[in-house]
Length: 461
Image (cartoon, rainbow, N blue to C red; front, side, top):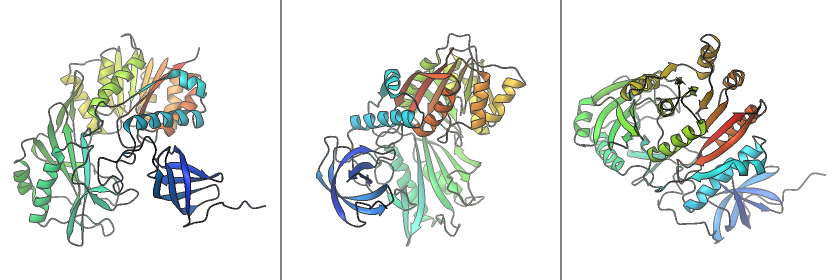
C-alpha cells in the first residue's frame, strides 16, 4: 500500500526544529515526515509553509517563529537573510561552534563509518575565534548593471542575483572605501559590466586581498577582454588610497562560473602581497590560494604541526601545498619537506617563500599531487614518514590515496575544508590499517556553515 505524505504543499503547519543540516537549514518532523527549513535553528518552535515535497522529505519556508530557540540572536547584518554568505548569523557563536563540531562528528560516523564513542574520545575541543567579525583577508565582488543601475555586492543564496552590501561584517571595513572609489570610477567612465547570458560586457569581478600583518591591500579587476582602456585612470584613482599597494588586471574571457582566469596583467605598485603567519613570511601572487582567516590560520597550522609529531628526522610530503604555507611550518621541525601543488604560480611563490625564510630543507614541485607523488616515490625513491594533505573541497584524488597507502607512512595529517569528503577519505584509509589518533575542528568561517578539520591518523601495527 502506497504511503500517503502527511503534509500538503502550500499548507502551513507548526513544528519544532530538532536539528540543523549540513547547509545550516533547520530540520523538523511532522508525523515522522522530515522538513528542511532555511533560517530555522534547533530549539525553534515555528510555523512553516511547505513549498516542496519528495517521498521521504520536503522543504519548507519559515513563516513565523512562535517561540525562539535559546540560541537565536538578531543578525548583526541587516541583509543577512537576503545575502547567501552568512547563513547562520542568527545563531549564537557558541552554538555555531557546537553545530560545526557535531557536523564533523556526524560525517565521520555516518560517511566515514567510524565508531562514535571512539570519535568522542579522540576529539579535541573546536578552536573558535576570539573575535568572529571582520576577519576575512579576501573578497570577490561580482559586478552587474541592471536597468541602468550599477550593482556591486554578493550573490543571493542559490542565485546570481547581486545583493548590495554597504557593510560586510566578516570583511575588512577598508574594502568599503576601495569599492566606493571603484563605484564612482565605473560610473564616471561608463564601464560596461559583464552579462553572463549574453557573454558581453567588460568588468566581471572586483577582487581585493589584504595583508593582515602589513595592513595593505591589493586590487584586481577581472575583465572579459584582453585590455582595459581605462587602466591609467584606474591607477590614478586607486593611488589616492594609501593602503592600496598593488593593482592588477585578470583576463577571464571564458563562459564559466570561475572568477579568475589564468592570465594576469600587473598595472601598478607591488605585484605581490607580503604577509606573515607566526614567524614565517609569505609572498602571495593574485592567483595563489591563501587561507582567508590569518588569525585562525596560525592556530590551524600550529595544530597540524603538533599532529605531525616531528622530531627532526622525518621526511614529509605536503600535498596540495599552495604557496608553502604549511610546508614551511613543517620544515622547521622535519628533515626534509616535499611540497606538491598544481598551480604553478603558487609553486613559484613557495620557492621564493623558502628563500625569504632561509629554509633550505623544503623542495617544491608543480603538478597534480596524484601524478607527482608516485614519481617521487617510485622513480626517486623518496619515502615519506609523514604525509600532510590539505585538498580542495572535493577531497583527495583516489589515485593519490592509493599512492599514500602504498608508501605506508607512519602518520597522515589530513586538513580538510569539507567534513563529507574528509569522512569518505578517512573511511578508505581506515580500511588499509590507519586509525584516528586525534581530531579537531577549527572555525575559520564564522557565521557560515563551513568548518576546517584536522585529523591525525597513524598506521596500526
